[in-house]
Image 1: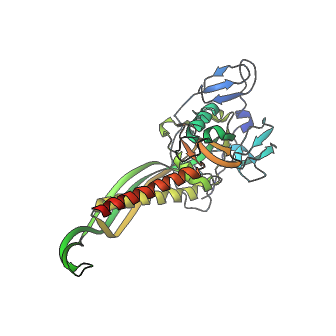
Image 2: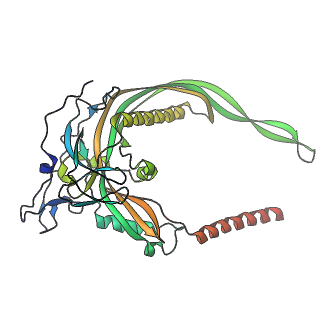
Image 3: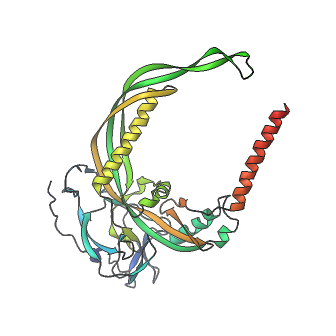
Length: 372
C-alpha cells in the first residue's frame, strides 16, 4: 500500500502562535480555568471543546508501510534531547527545554520536521502544576511503611506536564471455545496415620466434563501507550492511566500551548499487535469463565476479530521526581483525574516492626495450639 502525501498543512509554528487580544503576549492553556489564559495580563479566551472529528480509522496495518493513506497527517516541530534521544513537541519561542524523561536541560534549536499520523483527539489537562504538587504532598506520606519524615523531607525536584501519545483500538471479537471442565468430589479412603492406626480420610477426585460454546464481545477504546521512553515505567503508567475517555475532544494544537507533548515512538503496527494480543487474552479469560468448573484442562479458543479501527490520542500526564535523603524517586500524576502512582522509600524500622509483629502472632497462635 502506498502512502499518498496529503497537501501540506499550515506550519505548526503559525498554528501555535496565539497572541492575547488584550496585551499581545502568548496565551497558554490553563488547566484550572479550562481556557486559554494570559500569564501577563490575566486575560482569558474560550477554546472550543468540540467532538465533531473523533472518527475511527479502519485498521489495515498488515503491510510494509506503517503509514496509512487514509490517516490525516500534520507537520510537527520536534525537539530531540541530546542526552536520551526522547522526542517532544515544543514551542519555538521556548529558549531552553528540560527533558521530561532524563531531566537534562537543552538549548532549543530550530526543531526538525517530521510527518506523522495526526492525533484525532486530546484529553485536556485538568490538573494544574499546583494541583499536581498538592496530590504529591498527600500521596508521598500516605504509605504507612514510608519514613515518618518523608512528607516533610521530600524535595520536589522535577515536575513536567506532558501529553503522552496513545493508540486506542476498537474491535468486534467472536470466539469458539472447547475444553474440559473438572468438578471436585471426595471419597472416603482408609489410610494409616503416623502412629500406624487406620483412619478414614476424604480424598479429592476430579470428574471431567467436555464442554464447548461461543462468546462474542465488542472492545471499545483499548488503550496502548505509544511512548517507548516510558516503557520501562509501564507498570506505573498503567496505574495512572484510568482516564475518563468521554472527556476526549477534537485535537486542537492550542490545547498544547504551555505544555510539552511527546511524539509517538511505538508505531501503529506494533501497538495494534499488542492490542490484539490483549483482546485475545480477554477472550480467553471470558471463555474460561463460560467453561466453568473447579479446574480446567485443554481449553482451546479460536478468536476472530472484525471491524477493527483505531484512533491516535494525546492524554495528559504529570511526570515527576523528588529527592529524599539524596536519592531520586519518580512518580506520576494523571493529568485528568489526579490519580498518583510511583516510588516511595520504605522505613527499615517499620518493616522490621511489621515482620516482628507477624512472627509474634505466629508464635502466639502456635503456643495456644500446643496448650490445647
